[in-house]
Length: 126
Ligand code: HEM
Image (cartoon, rainbow, N blue to C red; front, side, top):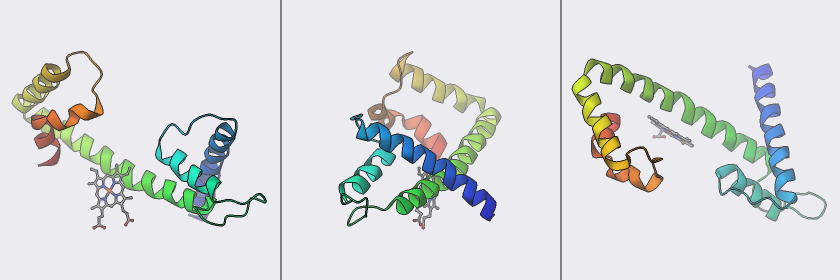
């Protein structure tokens, strides 16, 4: 377990180092969670790199682990079971497909549009 943990931390630290470098070179934070956490770290660090407020890099690494592990298994199991259940109930598969195509056609699904997906929401969450 400790070996796996070291490997995961080194992968995350690598990603963090790359993103911090890009941010220091002027790239915007892309407005994602990692960018926001690193902004907090960089704003709260004195000229010697000591963290005085904001998040420490260790805390950023822990948050990345938490979000990754809390988010992947749960989401993939939900999607897998949804596929299984939809294959058992093709009439709901048709209704969900029709709703998505009716609302978005071949356009990319926008985040704001999710709230209008009534059938898909009830398939996924009830
Ligand atoms: C179908 C998908 C998901 C299910 C069923 C699910 C379920 C849960 C449950 C039951 C809890 C515990 C709540 C409690 O403490 O009472 C929880 C906590 C949490 N979930 Fe999810 N979750 C899902 C997706 C996600 C995703 C996608 C993320 C992040 C990207 C996420 C991040 C978290 C976090 C950060 C916590 C709080 C952990 C803590 O500090 O205790 N979850 N989730």
